[in-house]
Image 1 (cartoon, rainbow, N blue to C red):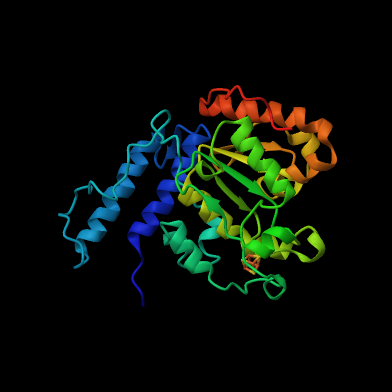
Image 2 (image 1 turned 45 degrees about the vertical axis):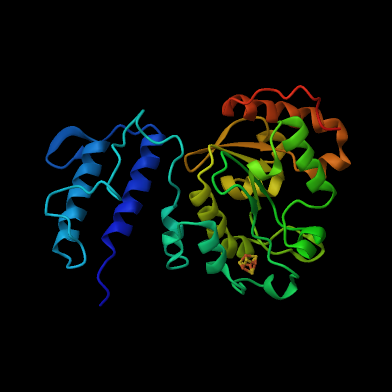
Length: 293
Ligand code: SF4
């Protein structure tokens, strides 16, 4: 039988406890003791257990009882959690074995391969993975590829994509290459229909791993479908937009999809309000070149 991967287990525990700490948890009940066991203590105990376990393994040289510098645990607790939290939701760990170990976008793209994990596979021209800076502080997540994106294999390249580029470059003063852009699903649904639940379920782990690898400080959720998929809610975007949400420890600003803005240009002012909040959160200066038209 394959021995358990203790470091993977530890990473999972670290992500989960870090997530709890982000949500405000400062302690857990300790067995036989009514006092709370503080989160860092739990993590230290887990690190020591894994280190001891590794030390018994012939491949690992660390002496028993020590916590390795590399791959060991950071001191995690309220106020000490990294502002760029590690992401790997537990329920996704088991969906595609090996996914959680992937450390780069290149590895993830290779893992996805010529994907046939859902019924959209035979309908696509190109799988649309994502573009941009793999260490971006800002990530935009849309719904799925349209016709232009399907043809070119790149997200947000049609008219709506041009508007998004204007928002990023003229509105925020960034370069498109400075941010990361992707979609909830990677293949175009026929006739641009909304993705179906089984398609989202099949593709969602890839988005979660993308978020986990890039580890943005802020996500902008573009449009009803993307925001509902990220938050697992049915609330309309008109009620969600403009208010910060939490996507597993990462701040997410829901706003309208650029395609909606092409049909409803009067609502650009609302998107601009949302974008200004994002810029404030990221400490970005107004570029002073006017809003995108
Ligand atoms: S939409 Fe996602 S799960 Fe479906 S075939 Fe494309 S990459 Fe695979």
